[in-house]
Length: 271
Ligand SMILES: Nc1ncnc2c1ncn2[C@@H]1O[C@H](COP(=O)(O)OP(=O)(O)OP(=O)(O)O)[C@@H](O)[C@H]1O
Ligand SMILES: [Mg+2]
Image (cartoon, rainbow, N blue to C red):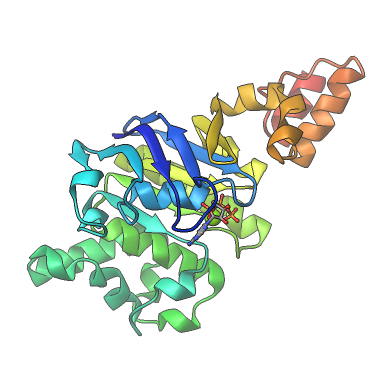
């Protein structure tokens, strides 16, 4: 579980904190989307969760460990796996399997166990057939999946994807998100999806919206879509499908906000 209390972080020289008075508990086995416009504090929050930044005030407790009591960057990857926007920046090896094994090297694991873990993680992201490929030559989508496999290798309880699908085309992006959703369910992994794309919140159980460093919304995706009029205040816009269903509703048609896919909308209109 990840818990924050009165969490605040201010970058040196910045006029105001990037995140301010964040109080959230993220329970194990949940998929949480953190949504917010550019500069709203999402990546700062991710780095605080992952122990890469230390709070200016308040606390972050991950699986019972208070990150404020640790030096920045301690071996948090055993608890929190992080994948960032640009997978190229995270690649350190020239062979896929070495890349996945990289994070395992200081975990005192024998080589047979390590091999097995690498195989499992590549299998999980559907990339076992690319085990001997050069990571630099993979497609962006494959590199992104490799990033997830590498983060999963240390067997973290939490996986944070910080705009980790930003480079992908829509089909690959949504495919990867549903793969992550399946993984989360299978491994009862806690997944935090950081995004500014409203369509990625559909896989989440819970959505937290950040605006100017503060939590302004914390509820289900359905609840978010029923508060569509609030979104512009947070510099967010509805995905096209929800924009359409809002228009249909204001035109008098019965489409529940819980209809999040085209199929669900079609069924609501023609049961
Ligand atoms: N190193 C830094 N020094 C000063 N200010 C910073 C630094 N890094 C981030 N900030 C500021 O902190 C605020 C939050 O930034 P953050 O990167 O957390 O936002 P974000 O929600 O991830 O944005 P994006 O969607 O663009 O990735 C922004 O106002 C940003 O300018
Ligand atoms: Mg960011």
